[in-house]
Image (cartoon, rainbow, N blue to C red; front, side, top):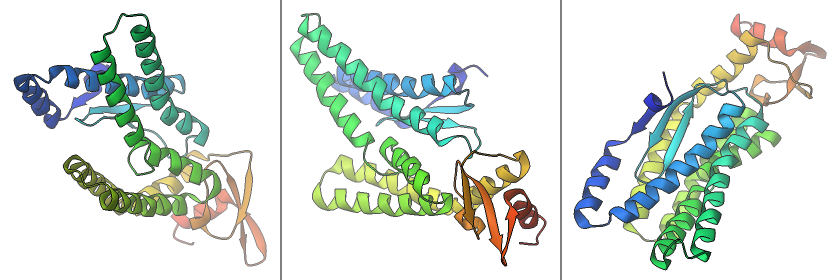
Length: 252
């Protein structure tokens, strides 16, 4: 499947495009759409460098999202750089827009539109709320410190708290609509935690994934990304491979 065939444009995006065309706000829509595309190209560029498998590229009215068909145990560094590169591309794009404006190639009105939508989309997307880039980046940073299972729980709690903070302090119909979508996404993510944790363990079991850093623990729940584990069980030490064999053979 080619990359183009993996692009999915949400029906609401098409509806919005029709509405803005009829109301004469097509320029605003095109600018927002262009910023979103540039942002997603940043994620795609870095994912191609690291040879991540791209599943789908979603285009929503408020932003985009690249879904990957990858192992949960890919290096944290790779995931972090893929996430950061979206905002980085967007910032670079705005710098180019600013240069065009300073050289009288772009009008003040168009520059103002670019500036407004650039900062609005950038700051919103970097909020520490899952599944926004800011939430995913924070989740990866948490995974450097905490076990995989605990990191996911923390980002879910922080995401709910972030939405509550937004709704209390900023009363806006657009924000309410966005918050509703985010709550749905976080709740779906919450319901998938058992599945994701089992997948995390199963990958380690099937692919014998090893890392240079060693962590001593006594529970599978405390397993961490980018770590190879040694388990202390009844005053003796066993390897991660043996512990996972016991888990999936029903003995642990």
